[in-house]
Length: 157
Image 1 (cartoon, rainbow, N blue to C red):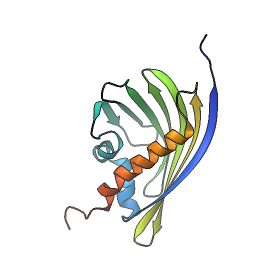
Image 2: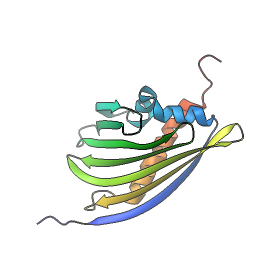
Image 3: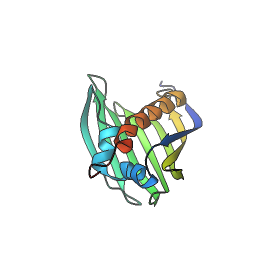
């Protein structure tokens, strides 16, 4: 018999970017830009990435590191306020096994000439296949990958 468990957790990450809220928001809204910082990286194979960024729209990604099992992320957008807020829910699976169900909220607030991004995640981690601290570390790494894309000078500058 397989052990079934659930661990509920909430974490909040605040990160400042030297870019306007519109530029940071765009990095979440534009599928090509999001793919670059969200799923691409050295050693990763991207098997799928689709995104329809609108309320009720869905995003799907499937990727793996080296020969590790495939990881899938399936998102639905619940609220979008341009340049201010994105609310979404998502599930993650590893090797087709559900590991978590989450509600995420991104808030973009002008901070001088930059942006303070606040990310809040409320999650149910399933069957001890993932842990809140690991997820928080992973999202911090994603925001680190996002920074150079939004903080570099615009192409037309």
